[in-house]
Amino acid sequence: MKVNLLKLMLLLPVIFTMNSCSSDSSEITEDYTTAVIVENYVYSEAELETMKLINDYRISVGLNPLEKINHISYKSEEHDYYMIDKKVPSHDGFVDRSNNIMKLLGATTVGENVAYNYNSAQGAFAAWLKSEAHKKNIEGNYTHFGISIREDAATGKKYYTNIFARID
Image (cartoon, rainbow, N blue to C red; front, side, top):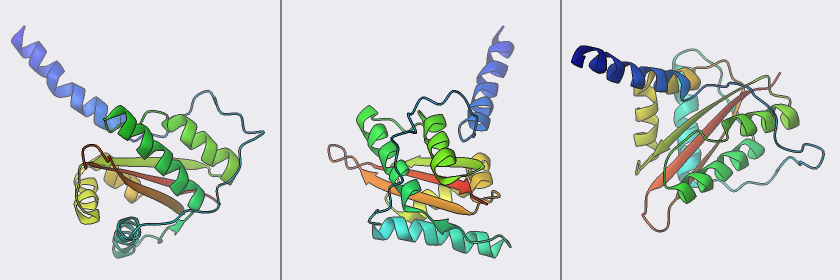
């Protein structure tokens, strides 16, 4: 009994990790007849630094650098505020964000990394590289990306959302 329970306990994190950054599709719940592409986004130094770290890494392993798209950063920001409101890092609503980016920007593939409670761009980036699923997104067959880093005013904890997209 204890062995079976231990096996189950070890298997659950593996299953969660495999699914935590997926780009599964499902029903579209957003009304795209009124949706607009957000063109303005003001980047913080930390956001620009994180994007540079990702692009420098991609170039170092022979991959193309990614182009930033303000709309993707805006969708990332929306998710940061959602996570701050819920007080937990998550991929909740990823399908809606992904469908929005696919529908409005013509993306064929979308991936997402989130992080929580890192004080620096380097800290969050290093953690993503140590995670197989997050590293796979950073090294993915993408062409564009966006990022948002927001701080919970009540706790001082930072939330990171980094969305990747392939737009041909």
